[in-house]
Length: 116
Length: 112
Image (cartoon, rainbow over all chains, first blue to last red; front, side):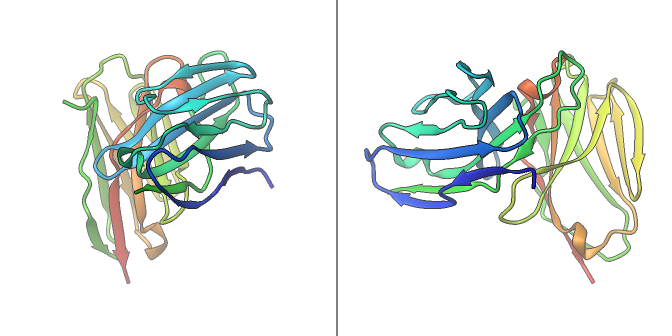
């Protein structure tokens, strides 16, 4: 089954305790991205990756790190989480086409993170 | 001002009603327009995709884009309880998926 898998789905942590949210896709997609979803603000892009070893900042990258060492995996790292990073996080992937893409992103089921 | 504005609702309608969901935007460079549907505790999934202006129909769903007014709409005919979800509009300039800007989402409830 084609899917994007995120773990953990739910996490409660404390300020400053490093954590990693994993994301894996089995569709051989070149493009992967992380979003956070907050009430009233919608989905905002944190980081994205066009291919292995190629990453770039989205609109809200502060406090986050990513890496893309393998095509299928794109972990999101919070080195020192703070309460304002409490949010619902989504990983997404897509085929990379040279312009004219349908814009179809395939999303994971989300990871709800609470930072106390 | 946000680049994409979307009324968060909630919108509650009886089964069988016609639903109209809307977004306005400010960036005239947007050319790709999408609607994603998000069920509770799930990730968004693409529902409709439109390039530039015009209408697109898929079953009970119709997407409309009016670039002159910077306004997009999603119509749902004969709404069903299974349509109850949050609907997110998304758009981007040339380049498609990479820099999608999402609306905040409208929560829709269709009651029997």
